[in-house]
Length: 161
Image 1: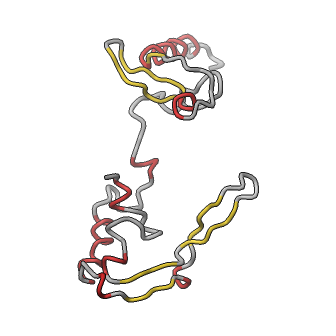
Image 2 (image 1 turned 180 degrees about the horizontal axis):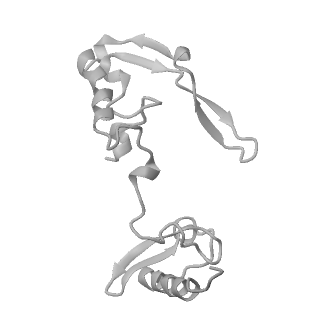
């Protein structure tokens, strides 16, 4: 089960821990759907809490109100720095050049494609996930990093760098 399935989103009240149904309340009209004029895709936008429609359904209750209302407080308390955690903060790159390495063909990101005795191999994410890039080449991450460090050493001694 995914982390998001259990914890959900505090602002939208999603996830198992924040699901009002377990406290005996059916809530709808939390979001409205709008169409992006450029991509023509439907996007969900949260509605203000005063527009929510709430109906009590005590026959569906599996958690008492005290426990249900304590769950968000426990979530906030368990955060690392006490402020809302973002996905970017939670997952810092493991390698120095992780976010800087791009595909030379499409400019997309590169992702891990397994490892062997030679080390971790990376490949264009667009090629791997959707096939929208024609660059299927796999390269060793250690080789890329070694080339980058070598280039930095060559250019840094120059005063203009």
